Length: 153
Image (cartoon, rainbow, N blue to C red; front, side):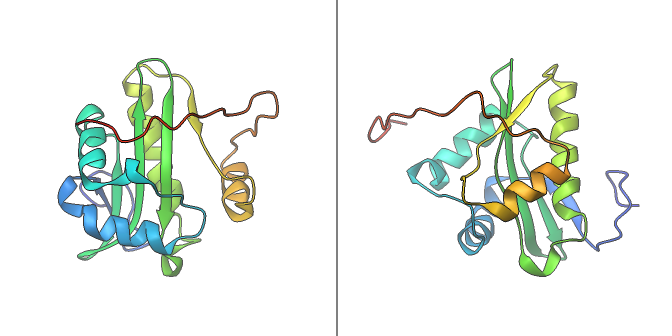
């Protein structure tokens, strides 16, 4: 068992995502298909997100290497998961499942009873993962977005 009480069969330790891990996490996101990055994923924006949602986002490490990451937060009413990514060599070992389960436990502890993800319609592997995790695709709602331009932080 590792310090967080989870059997570490995959040789991976789950830790809180701190901004010090930003560079290897960004590299992981860039190499994983289905992760859409934008200016909202700059170091400064991620640092602000981590600050607003302390302890919710996680990384998975094999030794010193970051092999998984997930952003998780909430608005007090609904939880949101973004950018779940696992390095190809560590997929199908339960790493993604562990990251998600830890995030959901944190949301429950915060009093949040529903969580949403945003996923590209053509991310078939991602959709299959979430369905296998017993998440329900929604066909009754869509996403409508507006670009507000550069933010001031």
